[in-house]
Amino acid sequence: MKPSDISRWEPAFITPKSIGSNSCNESRHFAAIVTNQPIEDQAKFLDILARATLIVFADGGANHVKDLKLAESEEHVLLPDFICGDLDSIRPDVKAYYEHRGAKIIQDPDQYSSDLTKSLRCVKDYADSLICEWSAKEPLNSPKPELDAVIMGGIGGRFDQGFSQLHHLYTASENAALPNGRVFLMNLGSICFLLYQGVNKISTPVGPGLFAENLGIIPIGRPSVISTKGLEWNVNDWHTEFGGLISTSNHIKSDSVEVETSERVLLTIELDWSNSK
Image (cartoon, rainbow, N blue to C red; front, side, top):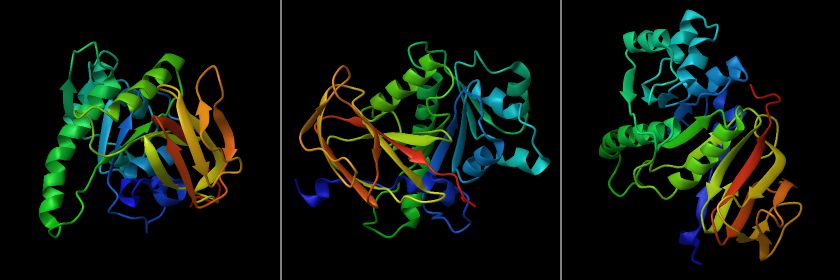
């Protein structure tokens, strides 16, 4: 495999230290999607959304945000650009509140797609026009900018909704109608994202406000054969599947971890919130 075929990942842009820093890389654009899950920590939640290029509430996610006790300045930070879904969960008073403040309400009655998928489509539609604007300002031959999607709430809350989020993370990587950037699931404990077939190199800085050492590699789609570098317990041509062997609670031992995989696999990394400011 040629070096150009390596998939490189820089997930540290959504670590606590990057989120809370005024000197973070402003060129990293991402859309924050707020799902219909309880909000674990209001202050940290606000920090994340304040960095987002785009804010989308997935239907009932709007209720959770509206029920926060916010100062007037914080309410401005949490105004969504879009509220997307079949709108069977958002309360009428919440819908009216955000609509009055300029949020675009996009109702999609399709019952064969979740509110999360509808929100990802919304991000895709917005990103296409935004990326054209960014590209026009960049020098010729510059890499095409992307808009990543960070799904707030991770797989917390209801188990069925958590599995649905993992399913849509899996399908998003092969669906041209969904974001052209990368999709991350995030809660206050960890982030997870889907690695591609082949060689993946992931930047994994460990320390206060960055990543903790715990990492997992989960074969959520189908059985896979993986090889790793940069972990405490590396493997080589190792078969992993549900009902067989899976790699959880491994430890990061390098600033960069390499995973070569025959199929797409889920990577989970624990966040370290200590001394994040």
